Structures are given as C-alpha cells and as structure tokens.
Image (cartoon, rainbow, N blue to C red; front, side, top):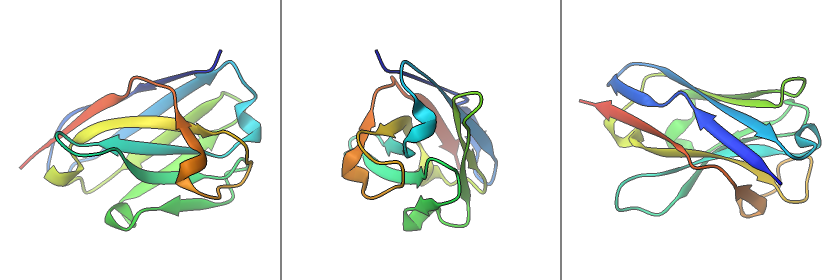
Length: 124
C-alpha cells in the first residue's frame, strides 16, 4: 500500500522559509514523477510543483516560481519542498503526490495524492 507522509509545516512570518518533507513507502517511488499540491481554506486543491524521477526536470506554478524549490532523494525515498519568501497567500495544507504512470512529469492530472498533508500558516 502506498504511503506518503508529509512533515515540516508550521507557523512562519511573511518573508520566512520552511522546508517540507514527504516520506514515501509501498512503491518504487524512484521510478515515478512526484509533486506537491496545496489547498487553502475555502479553496480547491491546486498544483504547486513537480519533479521528474531523476530530479533532472522540475516544474512550478507561476505563483511559486523563484521562491519554491522541489527536490528529491531517491536513495531515501524522500521528496522536499523548500519554500522561501513566504507570503500569507501561501497559507494552505500541503500534500505530496506520486505519478500514477509516468517517470517524467506530464500533467498534474496524473499525480495522485495519498498523504494527510501538513499545514503551513504564513502570518502577515
């Protein structure tokens, strides 16, 4: 059974940084693209970033470009999201996801969320 466990969320002031982690088990994650989604209060879940199986390709939504960095450690089955210059609008529950089919990122629609998420709160 696939398990994705997110951690690293918390309360931070605007302009601060957080590093999220996602521990993966139950599947050969090193063979698949992975990503991050977030869901703000009262809003739908949205795609944030994705990374190819090798870590060689990364993809970001415009609101986080230049501020967030996605990375992975396949030897440890870990996915990361380094978040810098945080803004109040980044407040959300962040979820990691694994691609159902592909090793290189194709579309956020093929990414599947399994975890419970970690809450990030950015105060102004």
